[in-house]
Length: 181
Image (cartoon, rainbow, N blue to C red; front, side, top):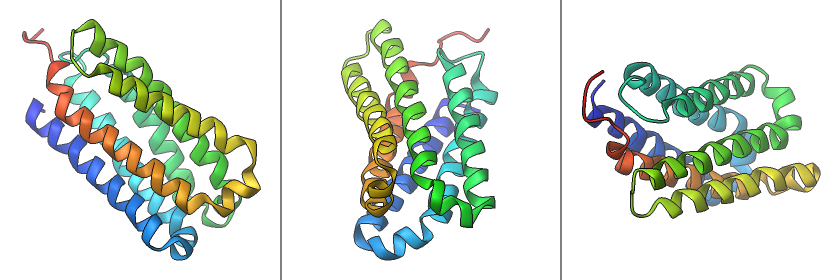
């Protein structure tokens, strides 16, 4: 897989995540009812994109192991969401919190690879990682209130994840090594 296709896949995943986030804001009552399906599909696509990019570029891209870990974790959570719809509504705040927490930590750690490579703006990735991690931690504090406000929280976080994915697609060319190993 070449750099351009990888970047396009990240950007498409980001746009889908942002669209899902906007839907949560526009229709919060309907979003809560269908949130597990919508979230599951968005997470499944995002996780598969990370795994495909890892599989095709692990030798050429620095820090690609984080994509594999995040991709596997995201796919597993997505399959759980899609297969257990009834139980999902009860556990959604916890599942969503785990996804945010791991995605935030992954982006936070990856931001230091950008710093090491001298990429300007690496601090934005650090900030997004911290925001996602904090959102994940906060979702564990009060799951009942979290379930009531989940459509709004999910909308905001999906938009943040989408922005992070689009930003990663825009800056990912700097992670590719210049030589083929």
